[in-house]
Amino acid sequence: MPTALYTHPICLHHEMGAWHPESPERLKAIMKALEAEEFAYLDRREAPVAPLDEIERVHAPFYVEAIFENVPQRGHVHLDADTAMNSASGNAALHAVGGICAAVDAVVSGAVRNAFCAVRPPGHHAEVSQAMGFCLFNNVAIAAEHARRVHGLERIAVVDFDVHHGNGTQNYFFRYRDLFYASSHQWPCYPGTGMEHETGVYNNICNVPLRPGAGSEEFRQAYIERILPALDNFRPDMILISAGFDAHARDPLAQLRLQTEDFAWVTRELLAIAEKRCGGRVVSTLEGGYDLQALAASVAVHVKALMGS
Image 1: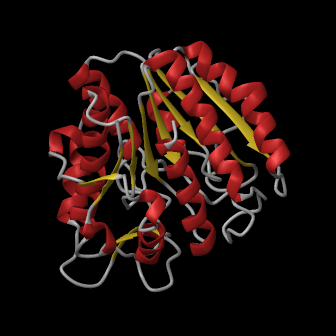
Image 2 (image 1 turned 180 degrees about the horizontal axis):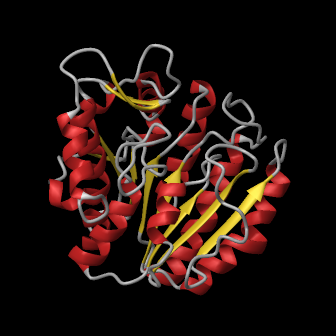
């Protein structure tokens, strides 16, 4: 079975200002990298529009309504200090959610082996009723609920290797026994959450903060000693990956020192647990990563690992 790639052209039109690091150039760099011959066998699919009731499984209806009411016809509307919308943002967000939910459908049905969603805006900072950290809707949390409510999967795990802690995902998962969230991230760093003592009501949260300047050794140790055993013990029915690549040494937004190969390594480790526990069911979605060269190379090895599973 192939690996699926979900994306949509509208995701290139969402932008938050010429100064903003979460720019359309990120997705352009990724898609150019995935044009290489080694990716010829990717099953390339267009991300559909998500229905609003899908989004409202996670987000408050009044918040969802407010997002679309505030999409500007021209210029930008700021939702917080670093999160804004232009005229394409609402539609891009619908396709970002629709893409990851469609990927879940395809993986559960057995139509594809696993999937990567090259979509934006990202999602892991979005709270139930608050946009933040470049994120409008929490794509991965919505996908988790989609897997549970549409497909009847009970235990959904999210593993997040973005350099920033996914506060929105953690806060949504915190009180659900059958939702597991694990994160490796820089501390101290935005958004200021993700300490080790934040373990969830059912010990279903696993945070491993890493000091600024930490590199491959500390990152791999975090997974070998903490995250991978916790994930394995959770016995997931599906693994979702919040795939942020801003822990790379070249990235300008934080100070971790990961190398490109670290993203291939962690992908292979997660796939091994997926094969053991849930028939290889894995869906990955793009979060951060702001140095275009590092982002493109890191996504390429991540997707290559997915294809080689």
